[in-house]
Amino acid sequence: MRQDSLDERLAHRLAALRTEHGWSLDELAVRSGVSRSTLSRLERAEISPTAALLGRLCAVYERTMSRLLAEVESEPPGVVRAAEQAVWRDRASGFTRRSVSPPHAGLRGEVVEGLLLPDADISYDAPPVAGLEQHLWVLDGAVEITIDGQAHRLETGDCLRFRLWGGSRFRCLGTTPARYALLVVLP
Image 1: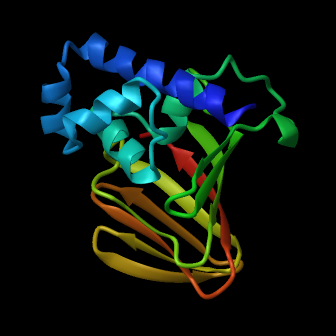
Image 2 (image 1 turned 45 degrees about the vertical axis):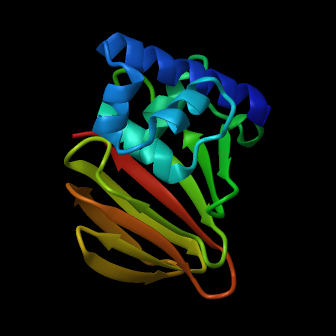
Protein backbone atom coordinates (compact mmCIF):
# COMPACT_ATOMS: atom_id res chain seq x y z
CA MET A 1 0.00 0.00 0.00
CA ARG A 2 1.32 3.47 -0.86
CA GLN A 3 2.21 5.60 2.18
CA ASP A 4 0.59 8.71 0.66
CA SER A 5 -2.80 7.07 0.24
CA LEU A 6 -2.69 5.79 3.82
CA ASP A 7 -1.81 9.27 5.14
CA GLU A 8 -4.69 10.80 3.17
CA ARG A 9 -7.21 8.23 4.43
CA LEU A 10 -5.90 8.69 7.96
CA ALA A 11 -6.34 12.46 7.67
CA HIS A 12 -9.95 12.03 6.51
CA ARG A 13 -10.69 9.58 9.35
CA LEU A 14 -9.23 11.91 11.98
CA ALA A 15 -11.37 14.78 10.66
CA ALA A 16 -14.43 12.51 10.70
CA LEU A 17 -13.77 11.42 14.29
CA ARG A 18 -13.56 15.04 15.43
CA THR A 19 -16.82 15.81 13.64
CA GLU A 20 -18.52 12.71 15.12
CA HIS A 21 -17.61 13.98 18.59
CA GLY A 22 -18.91 17.46 17.76
CA TRP A 23 -15.57 19.06 18.63
CA SER A 24 -14.04 22.14 17.07
CA LEU A 25 -10.33 22.17 16.27
CA ASP A 26 -9.86 24.39 19.31
CA GLU A 27 -11.60 21.90 21.60
CA LEU A 28 -9.58 18.98 20.21
CA ALA A 29 -6.40 21.03 20.71
CA VAL A 30 -7.27 21.48 24.39
CA ARG A 31 -8.18 17.81 24.87
CA SER A 32 -5.09 16.47 23.07
CA GLY A 33 -2.43 19.06 23.88
CA VAL A 34 -1.71 19.36 20.13
CA SER A 35 -1.79 22.82 18.55
CA ARG A 36 -4.82 23.82 16.48
CA SER A 37 -2.61 24.54 13.46
CA THR A 38 -0.98 21.09 13.63
CA LEU A 39 -4.39 19.41 13.88
CA SER A 40 -5.68 21.43 10.93
CA ARG A 41 -2.66 20.56 8.77
CA LEU A 42 -2.96 16.91 9.81
CA GLU A 43 -6.65 16.71 8.88
CA ARG A 44 -5.85 18.23 5.47
CA ALA A 45 -3.06 15.66 4.93
CA GLU A 46 -0.47 18.43 4.68
CA ILE A 47 1.71 16.66 7.26
CA SER A 48 2.23 13.04 8.26
CA PRO A 49 1.60 12.32 11.94
CA THR A 50 4.38 11.21 14.25
CA ALA A 51 3.88 8.22 16.54
CA ALA A 52 3.62 10.55 19.55
CA LEU A 53 0.98 12.70 17.83
CA LEU A 54 -1.09 9.68 16.83
CA GLY A 55 -0.73 8.35 20.37
CA ARG A 56 -2.23 11.56 21.80
CA LEU A 57 -5.13 11.51 19.34
CA CYS A 58 -5.78 7.81 19.95
CA ALA A 59 -5.97 8.52 23.69
CA VAL A 60 -8.51 11.31 23.11
CA TYR A 61 -10.60 9.10 20.83
CA GLU A 62 -10.11 6.02 23.08
CA ARG A 63 -8.71 3.82 20.30
CA THR A 64 -5.53 1.83 19.92
CA MET A 65 -3.29 3.00 17.12
CA SER A 66 -3.90 -0.30 15.36
CA ARG A 67 -7.66 0.18 15.54
CA LEU A 68 -7.38 3.71 14.13
CA LEU A 69 -5.18 2.49 11.29
CA ALA A 70 -7.55 -0.42 10.67
CA GLU A 71 -10.43 2.02 10.30
CA VAL A 72 -8.75 3.45 7.21
CA GLU A 73 -8.17 0.00 5.74
CA SER A 74 -10.64 -2.31 4.09
CA GLU A 75 -11.96 -5.35 6.00
CA PRO A 76 -8.93 -7.57 6.72
CA PRO A 77 -8.91 -11.12 5.38
CA GLY A 78 -8.34 -14.16 7.62
CA VAL A 79 -4.82 -14.56 6.21
CA VAL A 80 -2.69 -11.46 5.90
CA ARG A 81 0.28 -12.00 3.61
CA ALA A 82 3.50 -10.23 4.58
CA ALA A 83 3.42 -8.12 1.42
CA GLU A 84 -0.13 -6.95 2.27
CA GLN A 85 0.48 -5.95 5.89
CA ALA A 86 0.07 -2.23 6.47
CA VAL A 87 3.35 -0.54 7.33
CA TRP A 88 3.49 2.92 8.85
CA ARG A 89 6.72 4.87 9.30
CA ASP A 90 7.51 7.79 11.54
CA ARG A 91 10.77 8.83 9.93
CA ALA A 92 11.29 11.70 12.38
CA SER A 93 11.51 9.36 15.38
CA GLY A 94 12.99 6.30 13.64
CA PHE A 95 9.96 4.08 14.28
CA THR A 96 8.33 1.62 11.87
CA ARG A 97 5.10 -0.19 12.72
CA ARG A 98 3.74 -3.22 10.82
CA SER A 99 0.19 -4.44 11.46
CA VAL A 100 0.89 -8.16 11.30
CA SER A 101 -2.68 -9.12 12.22
CA PRO A 102 -4.82 -6.00 11.91
CA PRO A 103 -7.61 -5.48 14.43
CA HIS A 104 -11.01 -6.81 13.45
CA ALA A 105 -14.45 -5.91 14.75
CA GLY A 106 -15.48 -8.36 17.43
CA LEU A 107 -11.93 -9.54 18.17
CA ARG A 108 -9.89 -8.15 21.03
CA GLY A 109 -6.34 -9.14 20.04
CA GLU A 110 -3.84 -8.11 17.42
CA VAL A 111 -0.15 -8.53 16.63
CA VAL A 112 2.12 -5.62 15.74
CA GLU A 113 5.77 -5.61 14.73
CA GLY A 114 7.79 -2.60 15.86
CA LEU A 115 11.20 -1.51 14.64
CA LEU A 116 13.14 1.18 16.47
CA LEU A 117 16.28 2.53 14.84
CA PRO A 118 19.31 3.32 17.03
CA ASP A 119 18.62 6.43 19.18
CA ALA A 120 14.85 6.14 18.60
CA ASP A 121 12.97 7.29 21.70
CA ILE A 122 9.16 7.52 21.69
CA SER A 123 6.97 8.53 24.61
CA TYR A 124 3.21 8.30 24.98
CA ASP A 125 1.42 10.38 27.62
CA ALA A 126 -1.41 7.91 28.14
CA PRO A 127 -2.72 4.65 26.70
CA PRO A 128 -5.36 4.86 23.97
CA VAL A 129 -7.53 2.57 26.10
CA ALA A 130 -7.02 2.34 29.88
CA GLY A 131 -6.06 -1.14 31.04
CA LEU A 132 -4.82 -2.24 27.63
CA GLU A 133 -3.03 -5.60 27.95
CA GLN A 134 0.22 -5.88 26.01
CA HIS A 135 2.93 -8.52 25.62
CA LEU A 136 6.18 -7.21 24.11
CA TRP A 137 8.59 -9.86 22.83
CA VAL A 138 12.01 -8.63 21.65
CA LEU A 139 13.00 -10.38 18.42
CA ASP A 140 16.32 -8.58 17.77
CA GLY A 141 18.41 -6.00 19.60
CA ALA A 142 17.83 -4.29 22.92
CA VAL A 143 15.12 -1.90 24.03
CA GLU A 144 14.12 -0.07 27.17
CA ILE A 145 10.39 -0.02 27.86
CA THR A 146 9.14 2.30 30.58
CA ILE A 147 5.64 1.60 31.88
CA ASP A 148 4.11 3.98 34.43
CA GLY A 149 7.59 5.24 35.35
CA GLN A 150 9.25 1.82 35.73
CA ALA A 151 12.01 1.08 33.18
CA HIS A 152 12.59 -2.45 31.85
CA ARG A 153 15.69 -3.32 29.82
CA LEU A 154 14.89 -6.11 27.37
CA GLU A 155 17.18 -8.01 25.03
CA THR A 156 16.64 -10.56 22.26
CA GLY A 157 14.19 -13.23 23.42
CA ASP A 158 12.95 -11.33 26.49
CA CYS A 159 9.22 -10.73 26.95
CA LEU A 160 7.48 -8.08 29.04
CA ARG A 161 3.78 -8.34 29.75
CA PHE A 162 1.81 -5.52 31.29
CA ARG A 163 -1.47 -3.65 31.51
CA LEU A 164 -1.15 -0.06 30.41
CA TRP A 165 -2.78 2.52 32.67
CA GLY A 166 -0.45 5.50 32.31
CA GLY A 167 2.42 6.81 30.21
CA SER A 168 4.90 4.65 28.34
CA ARG A 169 8.24 5.04 26.59
CA PHE A 170 9.99 2.90 23.98
CA ARG A 171 13.74 3.47 23.52
CA CYS A 172 16.22 1.61 21.35
CA LEU A 173 19.42 0.72 23.18
CA GLY A 174 22.71 0.15 21.40
CA THR A 175 23.89 0.74 17.87
CA THR A 176 21.63 -1.74 16.05
CA PRO A 177 17.87 -1.53 15.49
CA ALA A 178 15.52 -3.14 17.99
CA ARG A 179 12.73 -5.27 16.53
CA TYR A 180 9.86 -6.59 18.61
CA ALA A 181 6.47 -8.24 18.40
CA LEU A 182 3.70 -6.56 20.37
CA LEU A 183 0.58 -8.52 21.18
CA VAL A 184 -2.27 -6.19 22.13
CA VAL A 185 -5.45 -7.30 23.88
CA LEU A 186 -8.31 -4.91 24.53
CA PRO A 187 -9.79 -5.05 28.04
